[in-house]
Image (cartoon, rainbow, N blue to C red; front, side, top):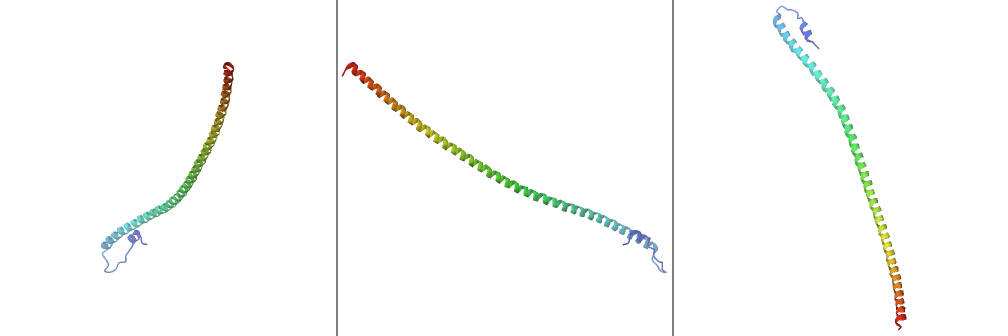
Length: 152
């Protein structure tokens, strides 16, 4: 590839009816300037391309880590959801067991109260029966005493 310096240092043979040296030199100066400008622009574009490629590689690397992070987050969310479901199931089962236990306790309390009620009915009936016997016995004594006092 020619460089601007190659163009500048280029010597041409002279012929009999050669070109005007000033015109050739002026044209070559213009070509050198344009050529150097193109080389500089090409170097700049290569540099920009290299930077862009580095950024693309960085973005691809970042993309991979973002995808990995998203996948990890997805797995974590699934784990959290499963854990929440298990916890909800455990809470429901615990609530059901508490209700069952309270129902048993309530049924036991009802049975105990019914037994106490039956016991109280028996005691009241027993007391009534004894009181009736005592009263009948006292009435009998009064009748006997009345007969003794008043006679028949």
